[in-house]
Length: 488
Ligand code: C2O
Ligand code: CU
Ligand code: CU
Image (tube, rainbow, N blue to C red; front, side, top):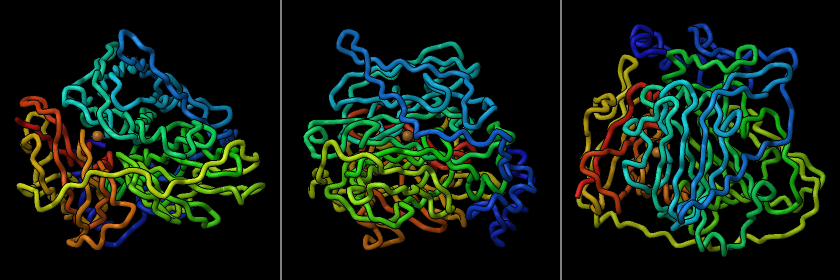
């Protein structure tokens, strides 16, 4: 949908927001109310052959090739066809694959070159989300990759162990590019993560999860959000994990670690196990938590990551759905059918986080997320690639206060760094234990606000900016994004 189109529809959308007509929550029903009536992806039609059931695909773990001391990851972005359904090939984009891309395993301190070759037939850019790297290597619209070209992000890995990801950041087209299948995980390990007694057999007891939802029209991806879906979140009715619908994961009866990415365009997920069992969150976006936090539901907004460990040692013979309770949808089903070959026991201390002190902050910056007439803005400005919105001195400790002035949910992402949440809705008491970690995306429900503390380190550049934005991809593409320079 073009910005022009939703200007004319915005009156209807505003009405929908006030009256709560359909769209955001489908609660298991395929009826999406007015979303469908307004020409958007209303409900999926499943091809007659049905869903192709499979075991949960585990993205290839791409170990790099060493060329002259630099670890190279060669990624080809291509048009592809993926088997979501029987008897139908779905047109997709994939990375070394037919949908999504391999997991890049990196070690802190490595010097790496992530080489993206664009065979999509159109321009793309590729961003390392959560990576602490120089602006010229960030992969935003300032580093375009033309069709047929290769662009390399070369940098030294310079951060704690965590689960990051890579995805397109194409101006005005990020949402559509991700929807078609362009995304993959980056796993960073360090001496500490290697030494910790955690499940770490990739694909066995250390399971990567890219969670998404989609609309399909006769088996083809249908990226066609209505005005209202742009506003309230484009939540599909087919939920999937690692590019598979209704998949099954066979595991040993032991502790299992999941590295979870909310890889959706604009859906909030409330994750948990069908039988209500509790689990431990061990990591936020950019690092381990200092200690595991016990939860039975985990809320993740788009682009947020979490690592969890669930103890299934009591569950031999059981099948347990892994679900989004907000929309009452199953991502995949766990089949506990193997005896443990190795047992692990979750440590009570995971890491030490360097915390910034609010009293050391030298200034507060204010960001207001707002929109009117279908035009999404930050501080009353829509994204302009030729405008620098903020200049942030290298090394300064700052408080960023972000206010959601709308009646719809948003989140806020800052490139190339992590931050700490210090207040939610005006109070530090509202910061939950599992938010007390390194974050690069923070959920801001309708009319909510957050204060985060941030310090830009290591990489100043007086001409190439980083970005901050809402990570609801429809909002980002519609203008809810700004640019900042880290200056010295
Ligand atoms: Cu996930 Cu601007 O990025
Ligand atoms: Cu990012
Ligand atoms: Cu938003």
